[in-house]
Length: 140
Image (tube, rainbow, N blue to C red; front, side, top):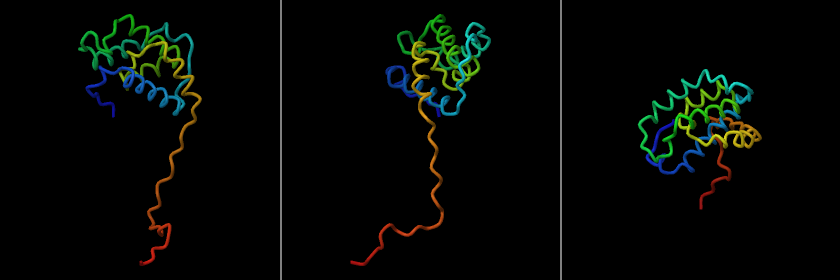
């Protein structure tokens, strides 16, 4: 599901923001987003998140989107933990490691926007019984 395409490093606005929107929408849709204040300072799950990020992006070339300093990654995780809660932040990084490279200032505004979107109820599967055509077929 989370395959890496060659354009991920070259177009951060398209791929990075789209992935972040997907993460935030998914969390809002399944109602896992419960902001918990004060967890960012704990950082007990930061090593797990950093390990997931480094496993996927540890060998990234300097100058590419996912090439980030240790301080940036820590700040990003702290902000994610502040906005979503530490466990949810660590799970997000496990699922989509690149989220740790996103701009921390975007997490709260994205949550605010996507929290206002109601979940979409899937339509029921089509009936397996044959249906008559919408208009009678008449020979010409």
